Length: 345
Ligand SMILES: Cc1cc2nc3c(=O)[nH]c(=O)nc-3n(C[C@H](O)[C@H](O)[C@H](O)COP(=O)(O)OP(=O)(O)OC[C@H]3O[C@@H](n4cnc5c(N)ncnc54)[C@H](O)[C@@H]3O)c2cc1C
Ligand code: FES
Image (cartoon, rainbow, N blue to C red; front, top):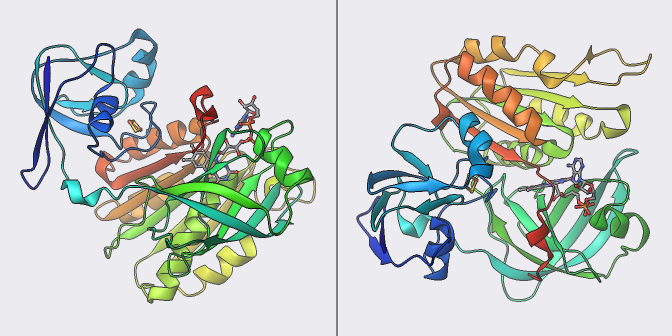
């Protein structure tokens, strides 16, 4: 059974999939890198156009596929398997655009609380490689003495690539959460791999609407820091942020200070389980004036969504209803680590 991958610049790879192997696994086994992120069918990063043959999906992916705004000829390589021996898939990017992630060592400089439930991990990349990344991308971090891996978005600007800053929501009983709360200390060396992900800032003069939940703010902080550092502050920017409780709220002072550099900026925050002192919107991020912001810029807007998977799904419905084309909506779902994340980086 054969499978052909064709890149935007005409580069072509013919591979032979193993039985039961996803298209992505086939490509990677032959050292062909594709754009990928979630590896579970939710982010759409790995999509390609099927111009020949048939692709099938396991039954467990049916719901995911129903929710995925794919064109009729598009397939998801991370969960799709070849179902005929003449599969040919075209990708809308050159192969050279996919930069391979590197293994690196991150030395912890500081672990400090940002709020009751969020901690900042600040560190420096050691060794001969620099962490060259685009704002919005993430690192995979190996939990010390545990061997499992967790993903965290860089909150630092890409202009300071080796001074890594991560914002981590502490989950009771979580492996990384437990390490950061109780054992992490300056000087600890963490094995990391990156940069990863295709949720990155598109540099073009369009309006930008950022919709974030909890620590989903981290990659947006990186994007705003970079936009300000580059002086690209003329396009309108809106940040719509949602948290569950006050303990999840952090970073707003900095976001507001960064937004002050933009001529057209808006920010709105919603808290789901608000206490009596909360003066903002009570509810979810979808209770904020999102549809209004999208309509304001409908003709030329990039929408960035980052946070828990249910938030991403709910906001995608709003962007669909507002008529925002799917290729202008970029999403990073902070899914829990799959069981497969237990192998070492
Ligand atoms: C691409 C990507 C980027 C990410 N970036 C960030 C980031 O910048 N900041 C950040 O805080 N997190 C981020 N995450 C989530 C992060 O990778 C971990 O899943 C999270 O920190 C929990 O790790 P842990 O080891 O503490 O808990 P685990 O040991 O993984 O989990 C402990 C328990 O909590 C559950 N659980 C795990 N995550 C969640 C969740 N989000 N909500 C509810 N229950 C959960 C698990 O199912 C398990 O039962 C990202 C995830 C992805 C996929
Ligand atoms: S990597 Fe395939 S949908 Fe996310």
